[in-house]
Length: 122
Picture 1 (spheres, one colour):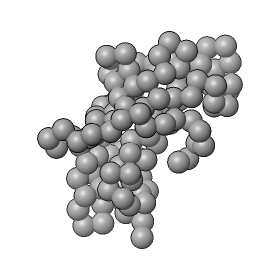
Picture 2 (tube, one colour):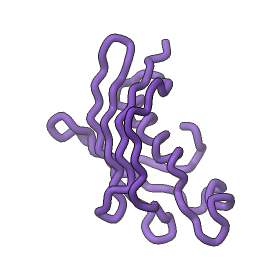
Picture 3 (spheres, helix red, strand yellow):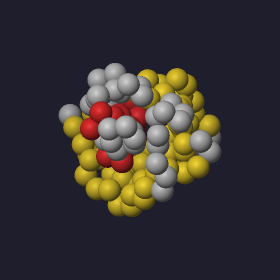
Picture 4 (cartoon, one colour):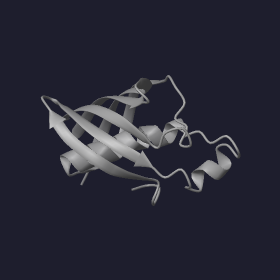
C-alpha cells in the first residue's frame, strides 16, 4: 500500500469477468491537508494507484505502471461527502503484463475511467 492508512477494502467480489471492490477512504488522512486545505479532494493519481493496488491484490503479483492508455477524470471524490466508492476492474494477466480496464464510481457517478498496462515485477 503506497499511502499507509489511506483506504481499506470493505468488500471485493468477482462478478463474471469483472472485480467489484468497495473502498472506504480515510477522510482524516494527511493527503487531504494539502489537497486541498478546507476543501478536500482525492487526488487523481491516488485513484489510479488504487486500481494498481487492486490489480496486484487480484493477481497476487507486484506491478509497475507501463502504459496509461486512456485516463479520464470525470468527477471529484470528496471524502467529507461520502467515504466509500467502488472500483470496477477487468483484469487480464498475460506474458509478463497485466492489462486493466477500470471505472471508479462515487455516489453512483463515474469519477475515473482508466485503461492501463502494468509490467509484472519479479
